[in-house]
Amino acid sequence: MVKIKVTPWEVSGEVDYKKLIKQFGVSEIDNEILSRIKKHTKELHFMLRRKIFFSHRDLKWLLEEYEQGNKFFLYTGRAPSGPIHLGHLMPWVFTKWLQDKFNCELWFQFPDEEKFLFDRNLSFEEVQKWTYENMLDIIALGFDVKKTHFIIDTKHAGLMYKEACKVAKKISFSMVKASFGLKEDSNIGQIFYTSMQAVPAFLPSIIKGKNVPCLIPHAIDQDPHFRLTRDILPKLGYYKPASIQCQFLPPLSGVKGKMSSSKEYSIYTIDSPKEVEMKIKKYAFSGGKDTIEEHRKKGGNPDVDVSFQYLKFLFEPDDAKLEKIYEDYKCGKMSTAELKEITIEKINRFLKEHQKKREEAKKQVERFVYK
Ligand code: TRP
Image (cartoon, rainbow, N blue to C red; front, side, top):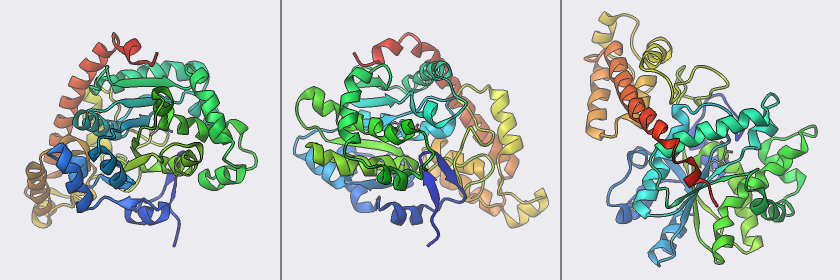
């Protein structure tokens, strides 16, 4: 089997999610687990219905604990290193839904050393700016300030470092090399880093003085960290964290990879309506035919059409409406220009609201930071 390259710092080539399930050893989100979730949430988020969140570890156990009154907390994070694009938002939109439905605490980590260590050109000054900017986007998504705690690795080092050392002591260099593709000449900060990302999975247990189950929603590329975390936490006397993984939002150029600021154009949360329009019109890969005549006759391919995928992944929660667009595009009744118009309109409507909330978030930041 050809290995797909997906590590926390590199995703290349075509990502086949079915293969990744095998390669990573995660479990598929099946209908049984979905109905189990639905028992508690009454409805299913469209990212679950559409299997955009497609795999998990130990969700069954987590729900069993929950059913017995042992409530879990959520943990996710963002390594600040640049502006937020639409792809980043996906797991957080879902995390917000989980917080609402299960009424749980969220611990949100900002590992401000991560990209400093992994990106040669990034200074701590720049990271500091992005930490603040990224926090605005996260707050704008509507997390409950009373139940959400931001932890910033360098700021909360006093709280985290000792715990990270306990994790680090159980990880050998060869384990890290194998899990993350690090090399002999990787800097030693990179080798240590994963132990910092493990800490929020058990920090609430330490603070509360009792074991609390943890659920980590994240994009699949972060799984190598949590595979290690899950190996180690029981050795330190904590539960293994459960996790749930989502696919990547496709890049503008086509449906098989990951939207990435470092490689090409992305749509950012601070883009103007004109920029969004230009990016979708100019760069969004289309599943349409070359001429409108041919398109009307033979129809388009929504499965490879990036505008359609953005509706499916983020912007059209209504299954019936999405299905109608799918059918209309496939049979040629809807043209590429029309489909792009719908997507542009949806993204811009979302961003207008988001940008307003992002402004308002400036007054809130301090209240979200853990004290
Ligand atoms: N490593 C993640 C990134 O590159 C940030 C992160 C820290 C994270 N803790 C997490 C992501 C927990 C998901 C879940 O952005």
